[in-house]
Length: 332
Ligand code: NDP
Image (cartoon, rainbow, N blue to C red; front, side, top):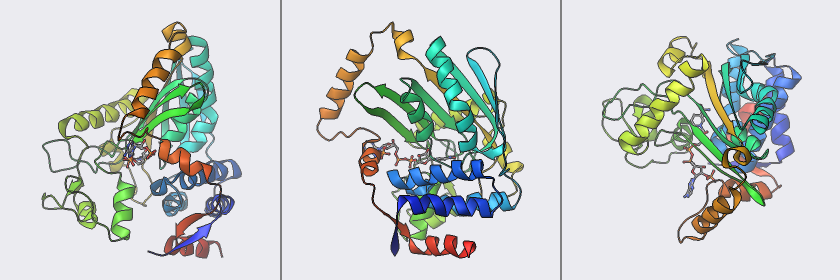
């Protein structure tokens, strides 16, 4: 695989111009480009520039609204709803996360249901944003079915990521963000593109046999992480990010999708909790003592540490040369 260096600013501009070129307005293009740049900055490669062809395809096909005007409403003081207007998720987040944070700061807890969005990104930006307001946050989305429930060989669940963030007084938030599949689909696609094998247990080929070949898994099915336990978390995500927020489950999302290569329409569940109110003001000593002990254990690294380390590097990022050429040629 050959790569070329690209500055973070140029990554942002490349993604922004690709979106504008495909018909997005400035607000929508900026929101996507920022998400793509942040993913490349933090080393979340499967959700950076790699996703731009899919973003573009769904704008061009008309499935996703590049002029989305998401609207937020309070159904109760703590139950907020955002209608994504068929746009990409980061635009809805720009309009709604600060309102969710305000409601949790005031009331101790608040929940955001988002519908009619297309989520094609990592989920840490949502929860990290909320944790920076001093809130504990959880978010999840479902996708099209490509994961077999434990015991099955046919897909029913999406890769259904779940993210969590915990605020810290003198450090960046503790964050994890993970697919409930043994491996995210973007990473499978990148492994297939780069000719790398994946661990056994990641997925099955089209005949239902275990394989280490990511190209065969793409034709077959992914497995959930952690056997039946991970399978149940994937099931929970289907329900939280689908019916609970007024949206569909993965297999219904797929049925109405046009197959243009971009993400299907779906929903997102986000909950924010104010530890000051919920704990009565006595949480920092306990949580910091716990995190300190955890991080000092031999062999342990905190989730998000890798991303935060990458973030300190403000220099250029190495981008796959073929991908770069593909994106740049479309802008000529
Ligand atoms: P990983 O398995 O790479 O990582 C999952 C979490 O575990 C991260 O928080 C990561 O932190 C942490 N972690 C990884 N390795 C270690 C380690 N050795 N010790 C301690 N912690 C570790 O993520 P996935 O492949 O499951 O998911 C990748 C991304 O794909 C996620 O951002 C997810 O949101 C996204 N996704 C999005 C979908 C969508 O529909 N929008 C669908 C499915 C996935 P760190 O980041 O610091 O490495």
